[in-house]
Image 1 (spheres, helix red, strand yellow):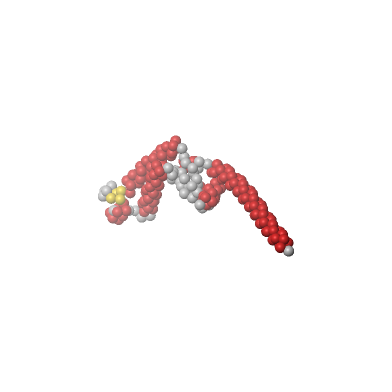
Image 2: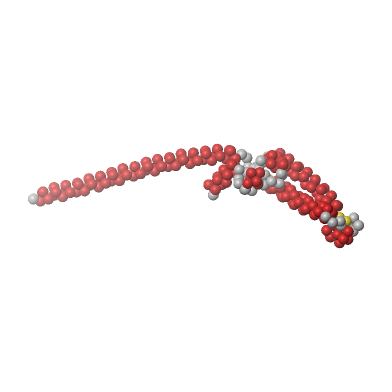
Length: 203
């Protein structure tokens, strides 16, 4: 009877050991499967990231360079300085035309001139002259700002998308800070839209 009990107990122990082994094997199998799945997921993610980087590279290539060459900047500086000199000469001429030769004061400040000024045409001409002078002064200020941007390396960058404004536009309007499309419509050009989109993705 005692022998049967010992045999039964051994059988129970054996079954328990086998169950533990089976559980360990199942656990090992689960870990192996989970590890394989993680490796597979990492590989898929790596492939996706590589593809995204390649796509971004292609888009970046479409956007072109982000700064003008030293030679280009030198040309723009000379162009701006030339326009600045011309405008200052025009302003000097306008100031002379606004000045009353008898008093040495600007016509707007001369009561004598105002009293003797002809009606209509003279008043309109004087108003136009002051308007041109104001615009000229503003243009000189914009040209000075453009020279500062050349010095700090930001000249030609669109303030909306950060891309270079086309060289042709800057040659025509050296103070421009956006492309013509944005200036006229308030909407970035196609290249600009891509640049803004890429910037948002990286933020």
